[in-house]
Length: 184
Image (cartoon, rainbow, N blue to C red):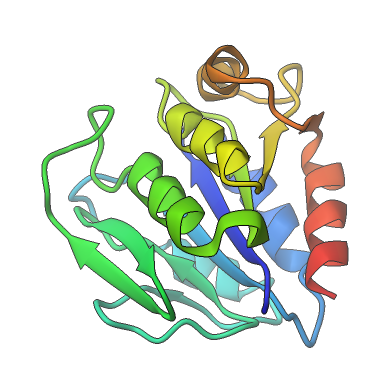
C-alpha cells in the first residue's frame, strides 16, 4: 500500500514543485500526481521536472496503471482522476475556472485511497484545491499547504486555510522533506 501524493499548483509554484520532485528518494514507494493550471496550452512541465528528478515524470494518459516511484502530470485541458490502480482523464466542464483542476484529482484520490493520500496546495490564484483538501482530511488523509509568507501568489493557500484547517503550513523545503520521508 504505497502513499498517494496529490499536488495543486498554479502561478508561482514551479520552484516549489522542483524542490518536491528533486527530493524524491530512489527508490520511491509513493506515487505523485500534479495538476498545474495550464488550460489548453502546451505543457513542458514533465520535461522541466525530468531534468532534476530521479523518478520518471510524465504526462498521464487515460487508463495508465499507477506505479510507485512515478510522477504523473495532468495533461493540458484534461482533468486527472484516480480510481483503484488507474488514472482516468476527461474533459468534463471546468472546475474553479480551470481544466485541469486539482479538486477532481483530490476528491477522487480521497474517495479511492482514503488515509493513504497526502494533499498539497501550492502557490496560485483562485481557490482550486481547497474543497479537495478538505475532503482528503475528511477521508483520513493529510492536508499540507505552502507557507502563506513564502507562496508567491497566496490565494490558493489562503483558500485552503478558509475551507478547513490544514495539518500544516510548510515552506517548499519542508514540504519536500516531508514527502521524501513519506516516500522513502
